[in-house]
Length: 324
Ligand code: SAM
Image (cartoon, rainbow, N blue to C red; front, side):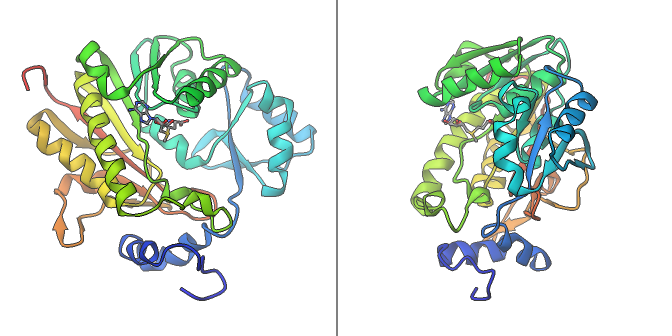
């Protein structure tokens, strides 16, 4: 780990774990992502404007837009245009939402439909809630839950700025939602709190200051409880997406495997119908322990200079869990 692109200050144990997680031919690009700013990506918010109009507005303002191949509403600009983009009227007035492309995948995989009732169980700052409201064309209902007070207010301001009219926000602990709303929702997104390894930056030591076994264990406890709540809040026949922005298998495949064991035949893993070069299947084992084969259908995003590290797993609820 000592060539010129090595983020030497990242914990050595992190480097060793990552070598066991990331395929060796992708490892160098993955390392670079901790040392270099990513291109700045954004999604045009169809609840505030048409893609062609907003793209033309930004081009007139001097931004160099590069379209994203798999999402007609998404673009990137060179990183030196990030600040100007953040300060642009399109951004401050909610016509665009700055967001890494990896964050656009969980709503895409969940595929919420107009008229449905959807739960976003860990919602702030609200980029994915807003995306789901746009996919639903502001028809139906989204319940968006966030437990941390200042983040809750950020969520509200994202939704207001973005004209998401179908969202009811709740400052609540998501682990309790299932008690009030058992089997209520057509779809549930759990974009879980995590150790955030996909966002580590060598020049921002606070991004990995708390990294380690203890933090991981704390996150796993939260993730398991939130996923339990998500499954119990979901209607039979409903779809759930579990995602994190971390590499740790303990917080990804192992959390989903725990839910599969808890709920037995009631829960199944589904394919994600998006095939990108940055995607890898879920791991088949970690540190000698095998994961169940259906978890290969989960998707890991390996950083490639545009996309950040992410984990996404789509689940289907086959039958009721009321009597469990
Ligand atoms: N989905 C969000 C987005 O795209 O903007 C990002 C969500 S972030 C990864 C996870 C969020 O879960 C954090 O805002 C965190 O405060 C919140 N959270 C943590 N524990 C929670 C709980 N028990 N109930 C609800 N939210 C929780």
